[in-house]
Amino acid sequence: APVIERVGPDVDVLARLVPLDVIRSQIHTLDPDAVHIVYCRSGRRSKAAAFLLRERNLKAVSLIGGIKDWQFEVELSAA
Image (cartoon, rainbow, N blue to C red):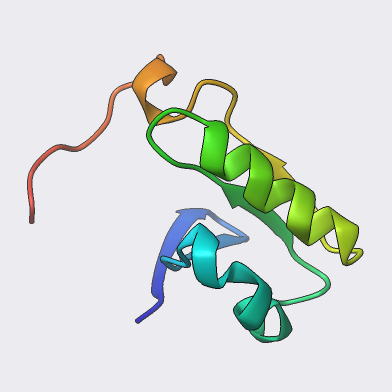
């Protein structure tokens, strides 16, 4: 199920797990007006996913190096 988080006064982030092997069949469920930020552990799958989304005229970017190269603090608890 999607998770919505408010990250700023006018910014909501909708996060949803869409595995690379099913992304083509799920593209129709994505908001065509949103910017999609895709990520994975190493950045390889997210780069491929962003390519697939852009190929279908969706705005998409991926985190270079994935989560393992993310330089900012992350929450590790399962809250």
